[in-house]
Amino acid sequence: MQKINTHSKHLDCGAKTLDLSNPAIMAVLNVTPDSFSDGGQLLTGQAIDKDKVLRTVEAMIYEGADIIDLGGESTRPGAEPVSVQQELDRVIPVLALLSKRFDTIFSIDTSAPEVMLEAESAGAHLINDVRALRREGALDAAVETGLPVCLMHMQNKPKSMQQNPEYQDVVSAVINFLNRRKQQCIVAGIPQDQILLDPGFGFGKTLEHNLAMFAALPELAAYKHPIVVGLSRKSMIGQITNTEVNDRLIGSVTMTILATQKVYRAGGSVILRVHDVKETKQAIQVWQAVDQV
Ligand code: 7PM
Image (cartoon, rainbow, N blue to C red; front, side, top):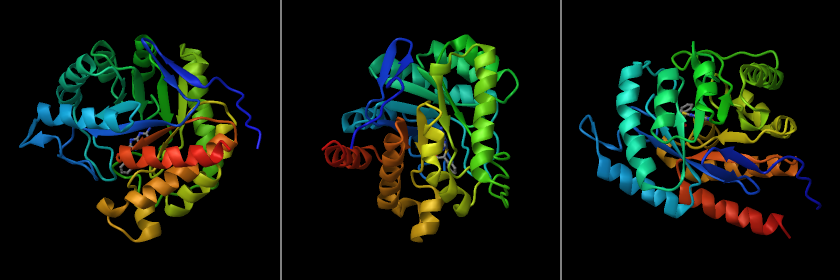
């Protein structure tokens, strides 16, 4: 089958360029005590274990991560908000350490304008905001950093988002929301080709909503922005397979590859936000081999 690649297959991250002619792997690095699938792994007591962080990131890069997504706020369903100072204390020293040590792309998973600005100074290359820059001052801060941004759809707030989510039509709600936020970003001064879109799987969505959105990935890809896909270990995999969070590897990788295939067949490009880098990389390699014949 002829490939139709109509939009630019790379992302300009300032000092770095991300190649998107192939799926990119964004590895999740949570420096939180309570993330739902990997909380507390990088802490010794309450303190961040720097050697553990360095070893973890080194392994992620070796295994095939293209981006390290550093987060200091837990956005799991029901999570309590953290203060900006707490978030700064968690992520900025770690980011400064990592960006000095490793020549890779770092994204900062935050909604706080102060964190965006400090993270840019500490070496971040990309802003990943599950609130799509809706927090007061976040859009202006993002513009000021000059970094590319990932806009994600979420209905409601993390604390309450999984309490009976409802839509008339989830696909148009997500696409309309992302289009609106994208226009606001462009008006504020973020170049069009610096905007990534993410349907926000699991963020205020039932299994049915997630599956409808999954089926509509080609529709989202038609907007010609790179798509960030986060399915890794999420509860929809648990609902489909009746598994607990630490037993969702195969379901996660399978669904991630199916998403990749949908987006690339529609002419788009993807960044895959995953916990399991090595396994995802192997699956991508197999998909590429069979897809490129
Ligand atoms: C429920 C929902 C539990 C989400 C845990 C999570 C995404 C993200 C997260 C995503 C982008 C997790 C998360 N998920 N950022 N941050 N896209 N752009 O699985 O899907 O770690 S948090």
